[in-house]
Length: 299
Length: 266
Image (cartoon, rainbow over all chains, first blue to last red; front, side, top):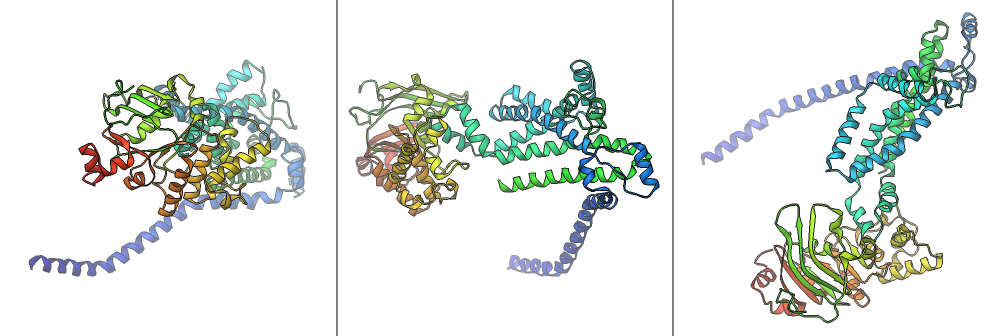
């Protein structure tokens, strides 16, 4: 009897609390909304500012002509005109440097990732995994310095696109290694066993079954790594230097979009080009990110 | 031959396809065996069911037959297995696995391949080249054998993962028989399927035993009773009893078997 009474009492109490609970619920909801607005406002503000300041400079010649001289820019600004010329030398340089870095980093990174997945328990794999994590934390300017010593000083004997690619490839490696390993872990183990049970040799199981099954995951990792290095400036300052002309020679100094932004920043006549170049770079990185998100959703 | 087989419950079979002698399998460094001293012979063109409660070593025994354990360095296998009087440890694993097909618990068609490519996956992945009409013939024959041809003949180019669970499992069986193996190993092939799909797979296995030797692991006693010719009962890694299914279900020789079959444990 006594117990029954106390249960009734509890129920009574709970009913009384319901208004307080609803209030608590609302307070938390408002709190979450405020925090999330704070989180997304920087990206909205950044994109808004870039579009506002930069879109005026974006025209056909922006993508087809090389950077103008200070004098041309000064004249245009004085006459209240759009600065002539574009950043095609930077765009092409970025494609060259990033493309070459990808060529170096993607095969090595995927192979190491596969190795780590296949030998998860081995001590050597554990060592590689920790070293790759440490590599991810190395400041990019330090990688630039190392590439300067390796390539600029000893291989090419001068600033070159190749030196920049080496520095960026080292930056990409840990990202690709990690994403490859994580993607492979998500593929059901029975798939591998099914292929092996058909008498398929081990290397063919990896090439013909595991890599195609995890392709979208691998592509996502690669795209994220590329979008990570697209905006790197510091290592390029020490390795590729910059070039006012379009350059396809991997042993010659080469320009890149982030390098151009730095140059424009140092030239008071070119201020307007900073915004449009940044808008271009931001748009490019954003597109890469969206594509990789789409790929993840497809899995 | 009887003398070197320690398990006295075994019916002696003439010209077995598979012969296991004193087979031990252990996980890790411990002395605990998941399969302990199993000796048995498997009859040609018959269904042999391996039953027993969870963790009794059924799947472990099955996977020893096509040397799947070799993939995991922690697993130690002792003893001998002969496939048509040939020691399987002396054969190359690749050659062995082409002669012994395997079907898994969960249907696992290759998600990147079409239905057509899944059936000939064994040939394709091994880089065996053939003419298109030869390949078409293998696909058609294998799919007819598993009763899937009429259901999928218009959508051979679709991904294998579009099929229902039961169809996927029959596709996996088609993939295993496309290579014309001597033996098909099935590891609880119906445990992820609904009753209708299960009965289709069971009917299929009864059909297939005319051409193939089938070893089936099942935790479902009634399934073993329905379709198998011979049954093994395993308990805690030991092969407790092995004999004709009808005999075992009507008149088990071992007390443990009787308790399991009458539902006292398991």
